[in-house]
Structure formats: C-alpha cells, structure tokens
View 1: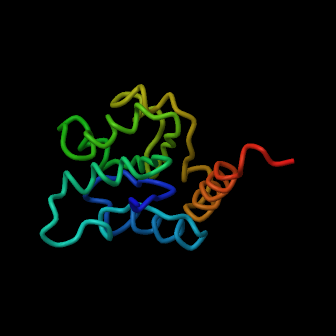
View 2: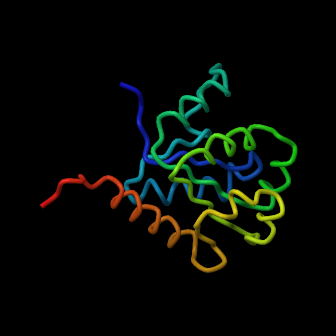
View 3: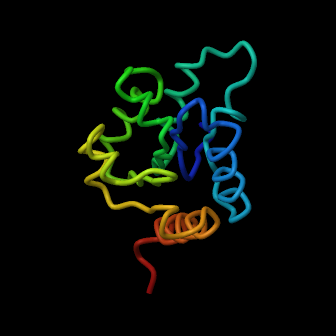
Length: 145
C-alpha cells in the first residue's frame, strides 16, 4: 500500500527551511499528513522519482507562492514540474506568502485563477487551520445520513 498523504507541499528550494517548514509543521500540528521533500526524500533516493511518487499519492496539492517561487518557475526547474502536474488536478490550493496574486498572475495565470489563501490576509497558522478544515471536509464519507 503506498504511503498516502493528505497534501503535497510544492515550494521553492529557497523556502524549505523557513516558510515551507513553518507551513509543514503547522499542518502536521493539525493532523494533516504532508508530503514534504525535506522529510520525505531520503539520502541516496532519486529526487525526481520520490517527487513523482509523492504527487501520485497525495490527495490535494498546495503551492506555497513566495517571491523565491516566482523567480524559480520561469527557469523550469523542479517546482515548475511539480506545478505542471498539480495544475491537472481538481484540488490545488495556492498559498500566497510575502507576494501578491497580481505577481503570481504575471508568472502563472492558471495557478492565479485558482481559489487560494494569502498570508497577507491571515497568519500562516490561520492558513494551516483552513487547510486542515478543507482536509476534514474532503475525507467525510459521501453517504452519511
């Protein structure tokens, strides 16, 4: 049985020790299982294959949109590949942090068109709580009477 996760956290490499880790830790504190490269890719494991498995085995995609991510996406690196895969899904939530939806729209109009959250309007802790609520709603059985 694959290691299923609630969310896949896409982020810029530069954010892995700060904003991405903060979001990861807050989500985990709410009981959300998160695929996060910093903890899910072991030494000697092929990075792209690990990411591919993480994407396949996560129910919802989160994209942490920061100035660093906006700089990296046009370079078509790993975050761009993750985003391309996530854009094909129904459940994709952008989380705008230290930037704006307008800046995101210039780089990725498709991602900016998705309904998301902004740390300019809510704290990172509040954003994590809202994602945890989404996960809780999303996992309820369809035939509950």
